[in-house]
Image (cartoon, rainbow, N blue to C red; front, top):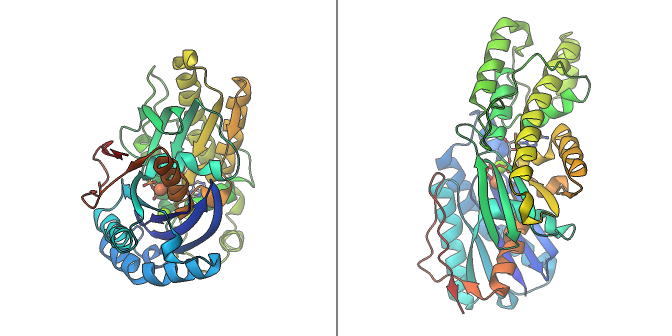
Length: 361
Ligand code: ATP
Ligand code: MG
Ligand code: FE
Protein backbone atom coordinates (compact mmCIF):
# COMPACT_ATOMS: atom_id res chain seq x y z
CA UNK A 1 0.00 0.00 0.00
CA UNK A 2 1.39 3.39 -1.02
CA UNK A 3 3.36 4.64 1.98
CA UNK A 4 5.03 7.98 2.54
CA UNK A 5 8.04 7.79 4.88
CA UNK A 6 9.19 10.91 6.71
CA UNK A 7 12.56 11.12 8.47
CA UNK A 8 13.64 14.17 10.49
CA UNK A 9 15.30 12.62 13.55
CA UNK A 10 18.67 14.29 13.11
CA UNK A 11 20.30 16.27 10.31
CA UNK A 12 18.70 14.72 7.22
CA UNK A 13 15.27 15.74 6.00
CA UNK A 14 14.20 12.72 3.99
CA UNK A 15 10.98 11.67 2.30
CA UNK A 16 10.22 8.56 0.27
CA UNK A 17 7.32 6.73 -1.32
CA UNK A 18 7.30 2.96 -1.07
CA UNK A 19 4.70 0.52 -2.39
CA UNK A 20 4.80 -3.23 -1.85
CA UNK A 21 8.29 -2.95 -0.37
CA UNK A 22 9.58 -1.22 -3.51
CA UNK A 23 10.94 2.31 -3.63
CA UNK A 24 8.90 4.60 -5.91
CA UNK A 25 10.70 7.92 -5.34
CA UNK A 26 12.71 9.70 -2.67
CA UNK A 27 14.11 13.08 -1.67
CA UNK A 28 16.89 13.75 0.83
CA UNK A 29 18.08 17.18 1.95
CA UNK A 30 21.18 16.84 4.07
CA UNK A 31 22.16 19.58 6.49
CA UNK A 32 25.77 18.43 6.74
CA UNK A 33 27.15 21.69 5.34
CA UNK A 34 25.05 23.75 7.78
CA UNK A 35 26.52 21.90 10.78
CA UNK A 36 30.04 21.03 9.54
CA UNK A 37 31.59 24.28 10.77
CA UNK A 38 30.25 23.68 14.29
CA UNK A 39 31.84 20.23 14.50
CA UNK A 40 28.51 18.55 15.21
CA UNK A 41 24.77 18.87 14.81
CA UNK A 42 23.29 22.08 16.28
CA UNK A 43 19.76 21.06 17.38
CA UNK A 44 18.13 24.47 16.99
CA UNK A 45 19.50 24.86 13.48
CA UNK A 46 18.41 21.31 12.57
CA UNK A 47 14.76 21.89 13.56
CA UNK A 48 14.56 25.10 11.57
CA UNK A 49 16.06 23.48 8.46
CA UNK A 50 13.55 20.61 8.64
CA UNK A 51 10.71 23.09 8.88
CA UNK A 52 12.06 25.09 5.93
CA UNK A 53 12.46 22.17 3.49
CA UNK A 54 9.74 19.62 4.32
CA UNK A 55 6.94 21.16 2.27
CA UNK A 56 8.91 21.82 -0.92
CA UNK A 57 10.49 18.35 -0.71
CA UNK A 58 7.06 16.75 -0.50
CA UNK A 59 5.89 18.66 -3.60
CA UNK A 60 8.97 17.52 -5.52
CA UNK A 61 8.50 13.94 -4.38
CA UNK A 62 4.84 13.74 -5.41
CA UNK A 63 5.63 15.39 -8.74
CA UNK A 64 8.40 12.95 -9.50
CA UNK A 65 6.27 9.96 -8.57
CA UNK A 66 3.27 11.33 -10.43
CA UNK A 67 0.94 10.66 -7.52
CA UNK A 68 -1.43 12.88 -5.59
CA UNK A 69 -1.28 13.27 -1.83
CA UNK A 70 -4.77 11.73 -1.70
CA UNK A 71 -3.33 8.47 -3.13
CA UNK A 72 -1.06 7.99 -0.11
CA UNK A 73 -2.54 5.33 2.18
CA UNK A 74 -0.03 5.33 5.03
CA UNK A 75 2.05 8.11 6.53
CA UNK A 76 5.07 6.63 8.29
CA UNK A 77 6.97 8.99 10.58
CA UNK A 78 10.25 8.40 12.45
CA UNK A 79 9.11 8.98 16.05
CA UNK A 80 12.54 8.51 17.66
CA UNK A 81 15.08 8.15 18.95
CA UNK A 82 16.50 11.45 17.79
CA UNK A 83 16.68 15.16 18.57
CA UNK A 84 13.38 16.12 20.16
CA UNK A 85 12.94 19.41 18.28
CA UNK A 86 13.73 17.78 14.94
CA UNK A 87 11.38 14.88 15.62
CA UNK A 88 8.58 17.26 16.57
CA UNK A 89 8.86 19.15 13.28
CA UNK A 90 8.48 15.93 11.28
CA UNK A 91 5.79 14.67 13.62
CA UNK A 92 3.62 17.78 13.27
CA UNK A 93 4.01 17.66 9.52
CA UNK A 94 3.02 13.96 9.42
CA UNK A 95 0.04 14.48 11.69
CA UNK A 96 -1.15 17.42 9.59
CA UNK A 97 -0.98 15.31 6.42
CA UNK A 98 -2.76 12.38 8.07
CA UNK A 99 -5.48 14.64 9.43
CA UNK A 100 -5.97 16.37 6.08
CA UNK A 101 -6.04 13.20 3.95
CA UNK A 102 -7.37 10.54 6.32
CA UNK A 103 -4.27 8.39 5.66
CA UNK A 104 -3.17 5.93 8.33
CA UNK A 105 -0.53 7.41 10.67
CA UNK A 106 2.22 4.98 11.68
CA UNK A 107 5.02 5.95 14.07
CA UNK A 108 8.26 4.13 13.28
CA UNK A 109 11.25 3.30 15.47
CA UNK A 110 14.18 4.89 13.62
CA UNK A 111 16.62 2.18 14.73
CA UNK A 112 14.40 -0.69 13.59
CA UNK A 113 13.98 1.19 10.32
CA UNK A 114 17.78 1.20 9.84
CA UNK A 115 17.73 -2.59 10.31
CA UNK A 116 14.86 -2.94 7.81
CA UNK A 117 16.44 -0.70 5.12
CA UNK A 118 18.30 -3.52 3.32
CA UNK A 119 14.90 -5.13 2.57
CA UNK A 120 14.55 -2.51 -0.18
CA UNK A 121 17.42 -4.18 -2.02
CA UNK A 122 17.04 -7.87 -1.13
CA UNK A 123 14.84 -10.25 0.84
CA UNK A 124 15.98 -10.58 4.43
CA UNK A 125 15.62 -14.09 5.83
CA UNK A 126 14.34 -14.13 9.38
CA UNK A 127 15.17 -14.82 12.16
CA UNK A 128 18.17 -12.54 11.76
CA UNK A 129 20.92 -11.24 13.98
CA UNK A 130 21.11 -7.46 13.60
CA UNK A 131 24.13 -5.23 14.10
CA UNK A 132 23.16 -1.56 14.20
CA UNK A 133 26.15 0.77 13.95
CA UNK A 134 25.07 4.37 13.53
CA UNK A 135 25.96 7.87 14.63
CA UNK A 136 24.22 7.52 17.99
CA UNK A 137 23.84 3.77 18.57
CA UNK A 138 25.76 0.52 18.57
CA UNK A 139 23.56 -2.48 19.30
CA UNK A 140 23.03 -6.12 18.46
CA UNK A 141 19.51 -7.46 18.00
CA UNK A 142 17.74 -10.74 17.71
CA UNK A 143 15.17 -10.02 14.97
CA UNK A 144 12.73 -12.93 15.14
CA UNK A 145 10.23 -11.64 12.58
CA UNK A 146 10.15 -8.43 10.51
CA UNK A 147 8.34 -6.72 13.42
CA UNK A 148 9.97 -8.36 16.45
CA UNK A 149 13.25 -6.76 17.55
CA UNK A 150 15.02 -7.65 20.80
CA UNK A 151 18.16 -5.82 21.88
CA UNK A 152 20.97 -8.18 22.93
CA UNK A 153 23.94 -5.86 23.47
CA UNK A 154 24.36 -2.09 23.48
CA UNK A 155 27.08 0.48 23.97
CA UNK A 156 27.77 1.60 27.51
CA UNK A 157 29.03 5.00 26.35
CA UNK A 158 29.83 6.23 22.83
CA UNK A 159 28.51 4.75 19.60
CA UNK A 160 30.87 3.46 16.92
CA UNK A 161 29.92 6.43 14.73
CA UNK A 162 30.81 8.86 17.50
CA UNK A 163 34.22 7.20 17.82
CA UNK A 164 34.78 7.63 14.09
CA UNK A 165 33.63 11.24 14.18
CA UNK A 166 35.68 12.13 17.26
CA UNK A 167 38.77 10.46 15.81
CA UNK A 168 38.23 12.44 12.61
CA UNK A 169 37.80 15.61 14.65
CA UNK A 170 41.13 15.03 16.41
CA UNK A 171 42.71 14.97 12.96
CA UNK A 172 40.80 18.18 12.17
CA UNK A 173 38.51 16.68 9.54
CA UNK A 174 35.06 18.18 8.97
CA UNK A 175 32.04 16.59 10.65
CA UNK A 176 30.96 13.83 10.12
CA UNK A 177 34.44 12.46 9.47
CA UNK A 178 33.89 8.69 9.54
CA UNK A 179 34.02 8.38 5.78
CA UNK A 180 37.46 10.07 5.56
CA UNK A 181 38.91 7.54 7.98
CA UNK A 182 37.45 4.76 5.85
CA UNK A 183 38.73 6.11 2.53
CA UNK A 184 42.22 6.98 3.79
CA UNK A 185 42.54 3.68 5.64
CA UNK A 186 42.04 1.83 2.36
CA UNK A 187 45.48 3.11 1.28
CA UNK A 188 47.33 1.17 3.98
CA UNK A 189 47.57 -1.97 6.10
CA UNK A 190 46.60 -1.76 9.77
CA UNK A 191 49.00 -1.89 12.71
CA UNK A 192 47.02 -4.10 15.08
CA UNK A 193 48.96 -2.76 18.06
CA UNK A 194 48.41 0.93 17.38
CA UNK A 195 44.98 1.22 19.03
CA UNK A 196 43.33 -1.00 21.64
CA UNK A 197 40.31 -2.98 20.54
CA UNK A 198 37.77 -1.43 22.86
CA UNK A 199 36.02 -3.47 25.55
CA UNK A 200 36.63 -6.98 24.27
CA UNK A 201 38.26 -8.60 27.32
CA UNK A 202 35.02 -9.58 29.06
CA UNK A 203 32.31 -12.08 28.32
CA UNK A 204 29.28 -9.84 27.67
CA UNK A 205 27.64 -8.52 24.51
CA UNK A 206 27.93 -4.80 25.27
CA UNK A 207 30.17 -2.28 23.55
CA UNK A 208 32.25 0.66 24.74
CA UNK A 209 34.06 3.08 22.47
CA UNK A 210 35.10 5.87 24.81
CA UNK A 211 38.47 4.23 25.52
CA UNK A 212 39.31 4.07 21.84
CA UNK A 213 38.34 7.70 21.46
CA UNK A 214 40.76 8.67 24.23
CA UNK A 215 43.46 6.50 22.64
CA UNK A 216 43.12 8.49 19.40
CA UNK A 217 43.24 11.82 21.24
CA UNK A 218 46.44 10.65 23.00
CA UNK A 219 47.85 9.40 19.70
CA UNK A 220 47.33 12.78 18.04
CA UNK A 221 48.85 14.55 21.08
CA UNK A 222 51.93 12.35 20.64
CA UNK A 223 52.02 12.92 16.87
CA UNK A 224 50.89 16.55 16.55
CA UNK A 225 52.02 16.77 12.91
CA UNK A 226 49.08 14.46 12.07
CA UNK A 227 46.61 17.13 13.07
CA UNK A 228 45.76 19.14 9.96
CA UNK A 229 46.63 22.79 10.60
CA UNK A 230 43.42 23.83 8.84
CA UNK A 231 40.12 21.99 8.43
CA UNK A 232 39.57 21.11 4.74
CA UNK A 233 36.75 23.19 3.29
CA UNK A 234 33.93 21.78 1.18
CA UNK A 235 35.28 20.62 -2.17
CA UNK A 236 38.90 20.39 -0.98
CA UNK A 237 40.47 17.00 -1.63
CA UNK A 238 41.68 15.64 1.70
CA UNK A 239 44.02 13.13 0.12
CA UNK A 240 45.78 15.86 -1.88
CA UNK A 241 46.11 18.03 1.22
CA UNK A 242 47.73 15.18 3.15
CA UNK A 243 50.05 14.39 0.26
CA UNK A 244 51.18 18.02 0.01
CA UNK A 245 51.88 18.00 3.73
CA UNK A 246 53.93 14.80 3.27
CA UNK A 247 51.88 12.86 5.84
CA UNK A 248 49.60 10.78 3.63
CA UNK A 249 51.29 7.40 4.31
CA UNK A 250 51.54 7.87 8.05
CA UNK A 251 47.99 9.11 8.13
CA UNK A 252 46.60 6.24 6.10
CA UNK A 253 48.36 3.80 8.43
CA UNK A 254 46.68 5.36 11.49
CA UNK A 255 43.27 5.30 9.77
CA UNK A 256 43.67 1.66 8.71
CA UNK A 257 44.61 0.77 12.29
CA UNK A 258 41.58 2.60 13.65
CA UNK A 259 39.21 0.91 11.17
CA UNK A 260 40.65 -2.46 12.16
CA UNK A 261 40.27 -1.83 15.92
CA UNK A 262 36.58 -0.91 15.55
CA UNK A 263 35.82 -3.69 13.08
CA UNK A 264 37.54 -6.34 15.17
CA UNK A 265 35.74 -5.27 18.36
CA UNK A 266 32.44 -5.53 16.45
CA UNK A 267 33.49 -8.93 15.07
CA UNK A 268 34.14 -10.31 18.56
CA UNK A 269 30.78 -9.14 19.91
CA UNK A 270 28.75 -10.25 16.88
CA UNK A 271 30.43 -13.65 17.02
CA UNK A 272 29.59 -13.89 20.72
CA UNK A 273 25.97 -12.80 20.12
CA UNK A 274 25.58 -15.49 17.45
CA UNK A 275 26.78 -18.11 19.95
CA UNK A 276 24.33 -16.86 22.53
CA UNK A 277 21.30 -17.08 20.20
CA UNK A 278 22.32 -20.33 18.52
CA UNK A 279 18.98 -21.96 19.41
CA UNK A 280 17.00 -19.28 17.55
CA UNK A 281 17.65 -20.72 14.10
CA UNK A 282 19.25 -17.49 12.87
CA UNK A 283 19.43 -17.37 9.06
CA UNK A 284 21.07 -14.05 8.32
CA UNK A 285 23.31 -11.34 9.69
CA UNK A 286 21.93 -7.87 8.98
CA UNK A 287 24.32 -4.92 9.35
CA UNK A 288 22.82 -1.41 9.27
CA UNK A 289 23.35 2.26 10.14
CA UNK A 290 25.75 4.87 8.78
CA UNK A 291 28.86 3.03 9.97
CA UNK A 292 27.73 -0.04 7.98
CA UNK A 293 29.08 1.94 5.00
CA UNK A 294 32.60 1.32 6.33
CA UNK A 295 34.54 -0.94 3.97
CA UNK A 296 36.52 -2.76 6.67
CA UNK A 297 33.41 -3.39 8.77
CA UNK A 298 31.54 -4.70 5.72
CA UNK A 299 34.35 -7.10 4.84
CA UNK A 300 34.66 -8.24 8.45
CA UNK A 301 30.93 -8.94 8.74
CA UNK A 302 30.92 -10.91 5.46
CA UNK A 303 33.61 -13.11 7.06
CA UNK A 304 31.69 -13.51 10.35
CA UNK A 305 28.53 -14.49 8.46
CA UNK A 306 30.47 -16.99 6.37
CA UNK A 307 32.00 -18.61 9.46
CA UNK A 308 28.47 -19.09 10.85
CA UNK A 309 27.02 -20.14 7.47
CA UNK A 310 24.64 -17.18 7.38
CA UNK A 311 23.54 -14.80 4.66
CA UNK A 312 25.22 -11.46 5.17
CA UNK A 313 22.78 -8.63 4.46
CA UNK A 314 24.53 -5.31 3.86
CA UNK A 315 22.53 -2.27 2.75
CA UNK A 316 23.71 -0.44 -0.36
CA UNK A 317 25.65 2.64 0.74
CA UNK A 318 22.75 5.09 0.20
CA UNK A 319 20.58 3.04 2.58
CA UNK A 320 23.16 3.03 5.41
CA UNK A 321 22.77 6.62 6.57
CA UNK A 322 19.41 8.22 7.35
CA UNK A 323 16.82 8.07 4.60
CA UNK A 324 13.06 8.19 4.15
CA UNK A 325 12.79 4.85 2.35
CA UNK A 326 13.68 2.86 5.47
CA UNK A 327 10.94 4.64 7.43
CA UNK A 328 8.43 3.96 4.65
CA UNK A 329 9.33 0.29 4.24
CA UNK A 330 8.96 -0.49 7.94
CA UNK A 331 5.87 1.75 8.16
CA UNK A 332 4.26 -0.20 5.33
CA UNK A 333 4.97 -3.50 7.10
CA UNK A 334 3.39 -2.17 10.32
CA UNK A 335 0.38 -0.80 8.45
CA UNK A 336 -0.16 -4.08 6.65
CA UNK A 337 -0.09 -5.85 10.01
CA UNK A 338 -3.09 -3.66 10.93
CA UNK A 339 -1.13 -1.35 13.22
CA UNK A 340 -1.49 2.41 13.45
CA UNK A 341 -1.27 5.44 15.72
CA UNK A 342 -3.67 8.29 16.31
CA UNK A 343 -2.87 11.99 16.67
CA UNK A 344 -1.67 11.43 20.25
CA UNK A 345 1.50 9.81 18.89
CA UNK A 346 4.50 11.10 20.86
CA UNK A 347 8.05 11.82 19.70
CA UNK A 348 10.66 9.99 21.80
CA UNK A 349 14.07 11.63 22.19
CA UNK A 350 17.37 9.76 22.52
CA UNK A 351 17.80 7.86 25.75
CA UNK A 352 14.13 7.00 26.28
CA UNK A 353 12.69 3.59 25.45
CA UNK A 354 10.25 3.59 22.55
CA UNK A 355 6.94 2.08 23.64
CA UNK A 356 5.02 -0.45 21.55
CA UNK A 357 1.82 1.59 21.62
CA UNK A 358 0.19 0.75 18.28
CA UNK A 359 -3.55 0.59 17.89
CA UNK A 360 -4.49 -2.73 16.30
CA UNK A 361 -7.32 -2.69 13.76
P1 ATP B 1 21.18 7.26 14.95
O1 ATP B 1 20.61 6.48 13.81
O2 ATP B 1 21.90 6.41 15.95
O3 ATP B 1 20.22 8.20 15.55
P2 ATP B 1 22.42 8.89 12.92
O4 ATP B 1 21.14 8.66 12.21
O5 ATP B 1 22.88 10.27 13.11
O6 ATP B 1 22.36 8.17 14.33
P3 ATP B 1 23.56 7.53 10.72
O7 ATP B 1 23.05 8.52 9.74
O8 ATP B 1 23.02 6.15 10.67
O9 ATP B 1 23.52 8.08 12.20
O10 ATP B 1 25.12 7.41 10.57
C1 ATP B 1 25.97 8.53 10.63
C2 ATP B 1 27.32 8.06 11.10
O11 ATP B 1 27.90 7.16 10.12
C3 ATP B 1 28.32 9.17 11.31
O12 ATP B 1 28.94 8.96 12.56
C4 ATP B 1 29.32 8.97 10.15
O13 ATP B 1 30.63 9.40 10.43
C5 ATP B 1 29.27 7.47 10.00
N1 ATP B 1 29.79 7.00 8.71
C6 ATP B 1 29.28 7.24 7.48
N2 ATP B 1 30.05 6.64 6.54
C7 ATP B 1 31.05 6.00 7.20
C8 ATP B 1 32.16 5.18 6.79
N3 ATP B 1 32.38 4.91 5.51
N4 ATP B 1 32.96 4.69 7.76
C9 ATP B 1 32.73 4.96 9.06
N5 ATP B 1 31.72 5.72 9.50
C10 ATP B 1 30.89 6.23 8.58
MG1 MG C 1 22.91 12.07 9.62
FE1 FE D 1 20.02 7.09 11.93
